[in-house]
Image 1 (cartoon, rainbow, N blue to C red):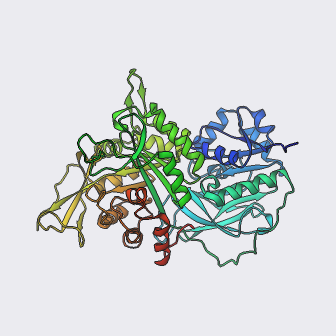
Image 2 (cartoon, one colour):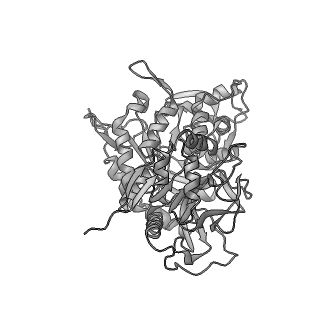
Length: 548
């Protein structure tokens, strides 16, 4: 007689991407069901509490579902298996600086506070960091393993009886995982941490059904051990429909995605799901899917792309970002569809982050005109799901300046930042330029420079920036390092270098010279001109940390 599958109850309260947690548990052979009532919580064999979003909004959702008290009762028994993930860990505490006045579950004594790291570290903390296991005999946490973190708030004080792992970031040490009895929680995302994260989930399920203790995983760590964040290597896929209506991964020559021959078809570099799976297997730290024709249609009704996300999340256990079409619009039937509706559909389909492009430019211009930003897509999505879920894609282009020339002054905006180039030159040999923001993927100019755009978008809720220099796209000459430096000086959130990578050395330049937090490439990976493994080997050879 076959053994019964582990029965896992998932506490789904309307948070961001819970699909990947379900996918990971089902891959491990679990039978997963969703919480509908308080009775479901109290009757769970194994309870998993994922969390993406804002502390206060999450507690409001738990109260609205009438499950908060049942959850407290379940957690009152140390022998009942429980796993909290990210916000699902922070909500175990009584309060958080993220939402003053909001009451948490109050199961663990401690403090949840905003990151104020030193050493120029950015917030949110985003990327692959280590969790140092304090008690290897517990059998859950490897003494030193790298997982995916994405959060702005951290557990700065914790009851020692619960403290299982610690992590360092920007000179600050915080509690990154909890364990007490069969109750476990982690700040990082095991479902997004590749094979190592899946192994941790498997150990949790095994311990939940058997003995409390598992075999020791290693020796205790010396107190002097510290952790460091590894920069991310990201693979991007431009996805659109071909002439037959099928979604394909393409790459433009400028903005022309068709083959050169007369009547050429849309350039087809592969199927989106297959390429996502390939890049996961090859070691990509994140995967970014860009819906490059979303502006022509209805993103919320883009069922084929939602299907791509669902299928990709079943095969790829690293973060997935989706960009394109995240904006307010009127549907063909006359109904209003908000950017929050579009983002929610993407999250529910398996996305971890959503990219906002042209809508961010409009929001920034409104911000400088005196608006409070409360109705912008950035603010609404960040409020509901946390700023770590919002990536702003900026597509500036160089405007070269003659000797002694200054950028134009836009009313109500700060002066445009000027770059001095050692590498790139203008059409008449110019070395100085400013960067004009664009919309429509570079098709339309905006009266806004990149520094002003980045500063406004950050104020409105952006948690990360993808910096795509129009002039570098597809050239293979390297990233625009001067542009990256301007954006890095303008914001205190992570910055992704995009557009221009042609060889592994370009990734190292972005990390070493521009202090980028991540670097992205598309075509060179699609065409197998450069392997992800070759990029990471080069980085390791330069002494740059990578996720193995």
